[in-house]
Length: 332
Image (cartoon, rainbow, N blue to C red; front, side):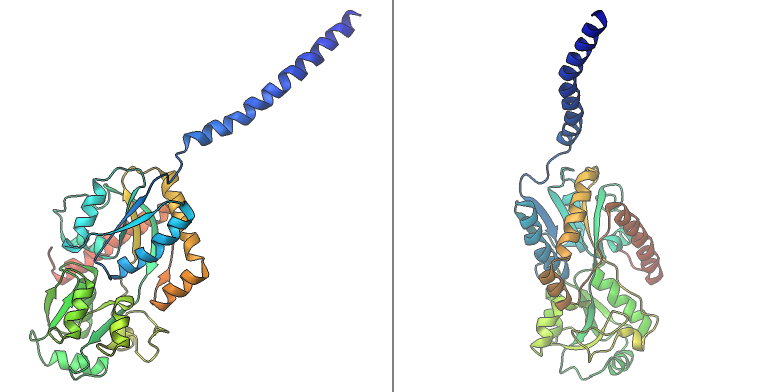
């Protein structure tokens, strides 16, 4: 009788304790998940370069799709000038909560290489989110300039040392360095004229006030289709399907290298869980068929990465462009 009573009490205790134990076990993950901040719960601000530049076009492609995924607006804010340093400085001072992001091009590591006195530390003040990918650059001239091929243009420029002009989106910008690298590879001596952004640089060439530039194909394509610019070469190792009749610059100049990539940055100390989410969501956007089609139409090659991979790539690009800037003797 005593043993039976003990067994009965034990059963009652187990039944009573069981649900409570299960409840605690289930509550622990929920408690941990509650410690992870929900993101986003308000509009996200994405800083970019000049309106109409490759970075701006990319931001305006990504922004609306991320907004659809997040259920929150993504506000694209153009902050051109100082080769991207104005936008970067805003990001460096922003709260590290994922609500201010910066879409950069190769001008970010170039600026870091050229100017040791930036108002921010290009590594310590930022956190990588994802590499986005690579754009195709094109070398256009004004159709009435004379040369109709890249070979003819190189000969034309070599015969006029320091007498022809090339434009860029600003001193020390990605378009400036790309053109300088072309000049070195081609043996050309030309005078640089920097503008506030890529669109102005293109319009100066189309207007005949500047002889050439080397800029993103996405920005130049409307003027090329309108016959206001004549494309002579593209920066990719192979020809672009958008301009199959235009040769790769590498076909004539094998020592001409590739440009850097576009990336998405957050302020330093932005939680990794938020950075990982944004990285995954950017990759999801690139998987959407119409986005793939739109980027391909601009000659863009997506190449998203994790935040950790992005940090490594950014450090390597700062090192690589530092060597290029030193070789060219350029200063910010």
